[in-house]
Image (cartoon, helix red, strand yellow):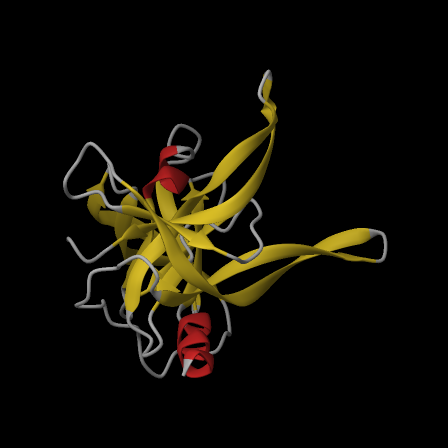
Length: 207
C-alpha cells in the first residue's frame, strides 16, 4: 500500500546542502537515504552551492554529515553522496530499512507516490511541512542523452525546495527523484510570470 511506502520514504528522507570551515552546514534541498552512508539527491542543488561552500552536507538520523560525491550524472540531474565526517549531532528516528531501486522502467499512466515540502501559513509566518502525494506519470520528456529520462507527474502541490525528493512505487521501491517543475507562462510576453503545475521526475532505473 502507498501508505506503507510513504512511511518508508519519510523515514529515509534526508536534507542536503553545503558546508565549509566557516559554516557548519546550510540546507537547500532534499535527498533519499539508500543506505546508512549513501544519499541520492538532485545534482543541481550542489551545483548551485559549490561556489559558496567547500563540500556537500546531509542530515542523517544521527546528525549533520560532511559528504563526498560518489557518482553524478549531469543530464539526468542525479547525484549520489557518501558520508565522510560527522559535523554535528542529532536525534531523529532511524530507518529500520532503506528503499530499494525499482527494477521497472517508468511508463505513462503509472500511479506513483512522492514526498515534497509545502510552506503552510501559520499565524504571521510560514512553516515548511513534508507531505505525501499520489500522482500519475502523464508525460514523457525526452532528453538529448539516452540515459537521461524525465517524466512529468500529474497532481500534487509544488513549491521551491522539493528537489531531491523521492518518487516511488506502491511497494516502496524508488523510481526516481524530483528535479524541477514544469512551468507555464501566465503572460507569453512576460515569461518571468509563470505557474508550476507538474513535478518532473528523473528516472534512476537506467543507472
